[in-house]
Length: 493
Image 1 (cartoon, helix red, strand yellow):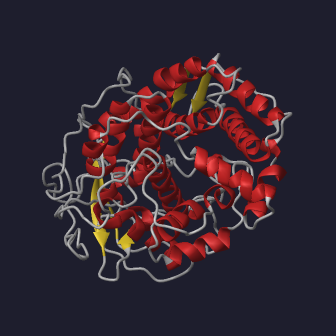
Image 2: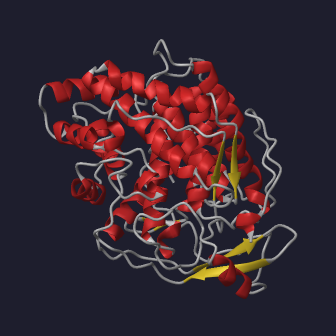
Image 3: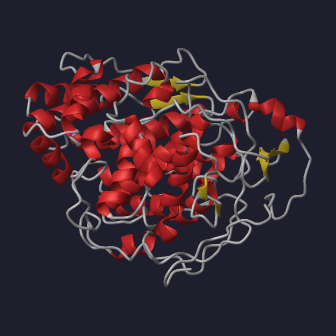
């Protein structure tokens, strides 16, 4: 039902007010790695500074020119992809529909965005101008025609996923003489960002726990990318604040509500299915990487909580046993139907399922920070060399990440790096306990490989309605016993 529910979408780029009715407590001792640190920074935003900095691009080019592995294998993966060819022709649409509408044409958008990104990346590595020209032509065509995103609730997914991806492709050619930067920024401000910001504010008029974490994470990625690409520091702060303290399930303490004694952080969608859990880890890594390149250490926030959650998903996806805490959460529309879902165990996995998400995360923690992350390292090695859109099937799930991490994120470990924008407070200082704050969804059948991983299938509605009225509600949320057991290390909590 909620997939067909519309809300007003009038939130501007600078909007920061949350309207969700079930705000949870803010950690009392949270490390100042996020919004406070961002607001204190007077330096301009870094460009290029989304997923790739100038240092990253220069490293890729130098390593490939020198014939160094595994960069050469990663670059070969890129050059073999049909989207990375300079002959790609854009097919811009005035209105893009996802989930419903006539025609449901969002596949055209994501194929063109990935072609722009891959050509732009290929240009930076090879120096071949034809690829930069192709990327610019694709992006200019879309910024000159696209006016709206429509459809079911899936329009929010389209805004989040394709918004952050468009910004990343555009960031790579922002200095090209033929690129219309101003028009691209208008597209981000007027088309992609309003839907994503509105979702973080209103959650499509649903109770705050209704949507799985990846819905929040797509929106967060778009808001953060918009802020960086458009030089809007207040918008960057909005995304960072939501990552740390947001009410929805995509904020870090809701996506990873339990840290076990062995240091593994339980990923909330492990009780749903593997594909969506992989998507969520990839999206959270994307948010962390873009923030890092602006001097904001979300990777290290709350005693490196994301590391613990990513390690959990990596171990589980490799076929290892992981702990799981039974939980119940509330679902439904505000002022309308409502119900609950309960997850009692971790979902099954296919060790052969892969997504191009591991290299970026593993390389950050092991090479930049010098931290042990054996499951991440194994998962990254198994997925290498990582491809991108078009290498993981034709459906939208294969285009949820930009990919090519083996080429883009492999780095030598010669020193412990600080964020690109300057040092931030130590990731060893963790936030205070959030008490019974986490909530968690019910397990459901895994989607077909390569399916629409961000989407909540329409079949979920029957289960939600059948469970209506079951369970005790406290303060608008069904609370989970034994939440947020945090491993305390060093001076941190």
